[in-house]
Every structure is written in structure tokens, then in C-alpha cells.
Amino acid sequence: MTSQFAPAPPILASALLDSSFEIKNGHYIHGQRRIVENGSWDLTKDIEEGVSLTPEKSVLSCGKIIGISGLQSAALEGGDDIRTWVNEFSQYILITLLRKNPTPQKFPRAYVIQFFDTRPLSPQALFSSLQERLPDCSSEDIESILASIQTRRVYDFEELVEAVSQASDMLFEVQQWQNRPENQKQGNSSAPILLLIEGMDQSLEETIRISNPVAGRARLIPLLRTLTVLSRTCASFLCVIIVNSIPLLSIPLTSSAQDQTPNDTYSGQGPHHQPNRQPQQQQQYSPGLSANSIFSQAPRRVDGLSKTPPFSAHVSILAQALDQGCDVHLLVSQVQGNMIIEVGKNRLGNEVGRWCEL
Image 1 (tube, one colour):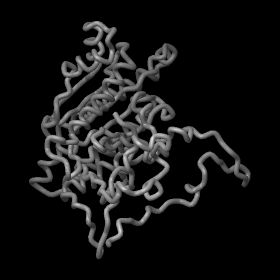
Image 2: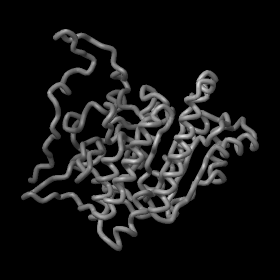
Image 3: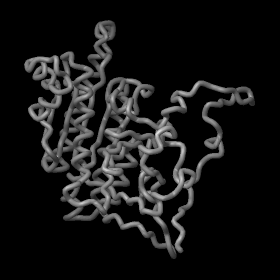
Image 4: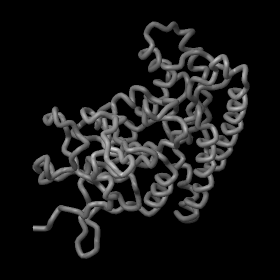
């Protein structure tokens, strides 16, 4: 019988130490952990908090580029397309930002750039969602809140780059306005701003079709660098979120993996006090990606060949480039019929593997 185990990823020896201990003057001392052990796996509070000015409150914090991707299982039918849930999650983040910061301000609260082939996300489409989250607000107040969204739909990659450039000019203007002493005294810089980009990967499909995946990646990298500079320059108030329209491959758990005991699966991430509600977990290593799902089976290699269903060439190259351009990568997947949000990558923190059901 072929073994279903896969080599463990390399880790530092220090990572095996209890993170509640710190080194001081050559001795270990017990320190206060940012996240308590009980419930440290749960991402619910971060998602409910939404975009935050500080990383202590939410993984969706300012000063970062956050990627959102769907994990599409080959076993799912077309009607169960994970992209619907990805769209729902990105809309949830936007609505949460508006709900927590309803006061009108001089500049837009959110800049939304969408490729034309993605689902429309106009202020009109958001009215009912915001009304449901703010039942005490009148229609006039909700319309006033929605007026703080600036949206633009683009039809190719060049227009998307142009839209990002225009948003950058506006955001630099916001930064200069907030840095004025009179505005700092009035606390006008106490609310985050969101730059939401949907369908960046999809906008490069034409380039790939008429040329090759490498050409598409070559056009993508400068834009990702621009967004990185923008997120760092405006780190005090800006959160950049890139929503990928092309799903990544998810390797479904086999029945043998589901029958494993807790000691055989990836431990330390899920809740120990709710074994009946916890989906089975096992680490996945996607080809070319550093964002890994704990809810998928690790691919096996036999005679040097992967048993994982292969990525198409353009998806693999674009997915790798987009993943490298993100500080945090959130993965949306279907686990036992539930919508799961998990941290697949975080180069600035230790939240990898945390998850919740939305």
C-alpha cells in the first residue's frame, strides 16, 4: 500500500519551543502571549473586527497587502463554484468597514477596482446588505454611507493599472491631509481606508492568451511592487486587499485521511474542546505556493511524479506571483459543506493555520 505521508516542511528549531517563553540574558522567562492558547486557532474575532488600524485586533490590518483566494475542489460541481463564497467574503469585509465607520469624511472610505467580468459591486448592490447590518439607520443615512465608496470597473489590465494609479494619487492626498497638525488634533486619521481590487488575475488572461504566462507575470510584478510601496507609505490608514477570481486547486481529503486519529493529523490549530465540530485537518503544499491549506490532503509523490491534479500553466505562474506579492493570504474553501476562512500565509505574523467558519 502506498504511503500517504509527505515530508514535513523545514522549520527552525526555535519554533519548537513554547512561544510563551522568551529569552532574556541567556535565560528563558515566561512571557505574555498575544493570543491565549485556548481559542488561538479561532479567526472569528479577526473577521468580525474587519479592517483594523492595528495588527493586534485583526489579521486584516493596515500596512499590508492581503490576498483572498478560493480553493476549488475538483470534486465539486459547477453549481458549487467557490467564487461565489469568495465574492461573499470580500463583500462582507467591505460592509464591515462601512458599518464600523459610518461617519462621512472628506475622502472615500473605500476604493473598489473591479475587472468587468467579475460580479458587480456597486453602492446600489450593497444597500440591502448594509441595511441588514445597520437596522436602525434610515435609508438616507445608508445612502450617505455608501457614498463613501468610489468604484471603477475596468476592461483590461491597462485600465486596471490606470485605476490603481488614480487611487494612489488620491491616497497620497489623504496622507498629506491627515498629516496636517490641525487634522491630527481633531482625530481625523482614526479610521482605516480600504483599496479593494477584484479580478487582477483575470485581467491578464488576454495577455496570456496572445502571448504566454511569463509575459503575463512580467506585467503583473511591477503593479504588485507599486501596491507594496503604496501600502507601506500609507501604512497608518490603508489596507490593500486583492481578490483573486481564478480559484486555486484544492486536494480533497480521502476517506482514509478522514479516519485518522487526531494524533495523525495536523495538530495545534483546531479546537480540542469541540472535536465533533472540527473538520479533519492535514497540511497541503500547493505547487509553487507558500499559502497552504490545513484542510486538504498533502500531495503524494511516486517516482518523482506528483499525484496531485496539475495546475494549468497560466494559473500556476499567476498564482505564484500573486502569492509572493501578498503579506497575508486568506483562503476560502468548502469543508464538510461549510464556508471556511483560513490564514494560509502571513509573512508578518504567526497566524498561519488559524481559521473560522463564516
